[in-house]
Figure 1 (spheres, rainbow, N blue to C red):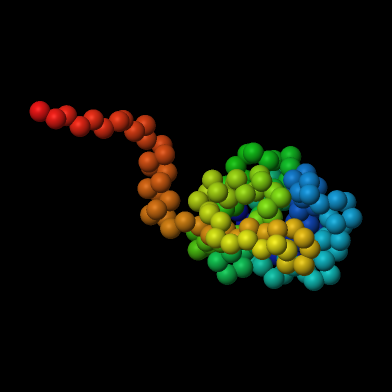
Figure 2 (figure 1 turned 30 degrees about the vertical axis):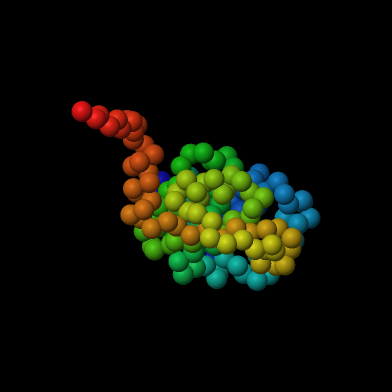
Amino acid sequence: MRIKNSSFEHHAQILEVWEKSVRASHHFLNIQQIDQIKILITQHDYFSHVQLFHIELNQQIIAFTGLAYEKIEMLFVDPQYFGQGLGTKLIQHAFSLGVNAVDVNQRNPQALSFYQKHGFQQIARSELDAEGRPFPILHLKRKNDEIYNLENQVLQQKLQPCYSIDH
């Protein structure tokens, strides 16, 4: 499966993936809130304000990401394909395009863990989301690649204790 550029003709399928994914993973939102956000996405044509990329299987979109400048604005995977590396594939593509930031809802620990696993760390926190709702947002930035690679090497090594021998 390769990553493809998305266009307006893909927006309906992308919205379906968004909705399935949100209903499966954003347990802090009730049905009315999800429906309200869906209306905002279509009314304000959110997908046209980001650079969209998607992954297809049998001509059906199963995962997508939306990027703006150096930030991931959205990354969603059809829940049927959770845990199969599609999010990682999309985030690696985003990295290749210079992305180094993302915002995550504090009440979505799975997403926070996913981004931390990929080298992001929290740099700030907002009490309200972009629409002014009481959903705290964590602002994440990717660690410097050199520091991230060094930390991963240290964590992956089994360090042996050092002993000082005095004669």
